[in-house]
Amino acid sequence: MALLDEQLVDEWLNRKGFFTMRGLKVGNDEIDLLAVRMIDQLECWHVEVQVSYRPIGYVGGNRSARRRTPEEIQLGIEQWVHKKYTSPRKVARRVAVLPSAQWKYIFVHGVLKDESELEYMTGLGVTPISYKQVLNELRAAPAGNTSSSLGSDITEILRYLEND
View 1 (cartoon, rainbow, N blue to C red):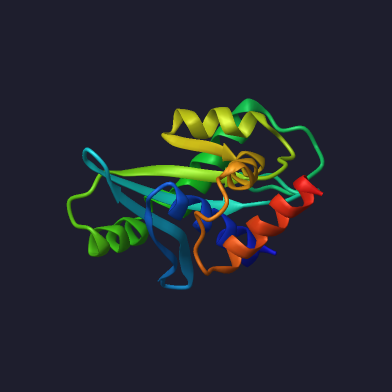
View 2 (cartoon, rainbow, N blue to C red; view 1 turned 90 degrees about the horizontal axis):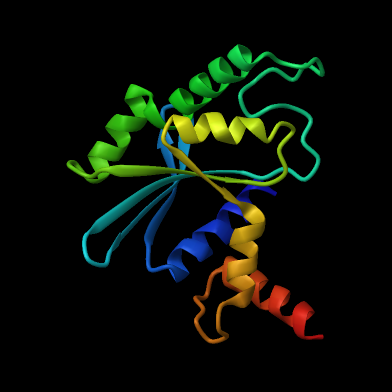
């Protein structure tokens, strides 16, 4: 399902005018999506996609059912942001793609076990975007503004269901 979610986010970004690169390898890890567009100035997004409908763990680690302290949440999110966006390997990979770019960090998410994690992410420079928002924008996009991707095909299915 993760691949499908990434493809739909990729389609969403393409419809917003971004050129995208998906699944860039970084050692044993990967960057979900890098997106670049030029409108008035160069805009660069590093997008991570994590969609769950029935989450069993926290984004910031720890699958324990016990309640976490604010300090534990902060530490878990700091570690997650480092792993996903700011580790030296991830920075080097982005620099290799576009040397002097300023990257905006985007996190597309589904249902979260603890919504307070989003506040900590925002404080660390990550912009959260709900997967539901992505799907709603794809569904609402005018027909005919499509590519030949799987994401476009699924968007047409969503539009079909809405008009039935």
